[in-house]
Length: 115
Image (cartoon, rainbow, N blue to C red; front, side, top):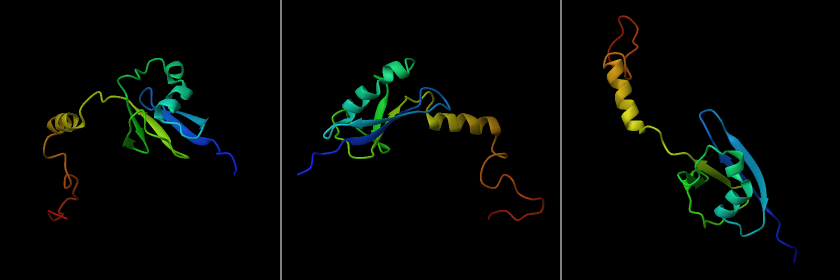
């Protein structure tokens, strides 16, 4: 029986807007999310990132530190939101006004209302 091969995992984080850091790792079989974060050493790579306040996801789904990893998993470190998206949309809409926003705001002159 052949020995189990290493897991190939990617750890990704965005320390700031429009900045993405991806670290490719080889981990022993049976590794979990905590092992991947420790091996990536994000505290040294991104000192401005508060890892305690961040959420971790695997493949776009929230994951705990003990979740086991599979081959080619992508571990994502998610920063906390600065502004709630619903509040931001509401404020943007109030600044724009009802006539300049929405699906039918940009009609050709003389066009029928609706689709």
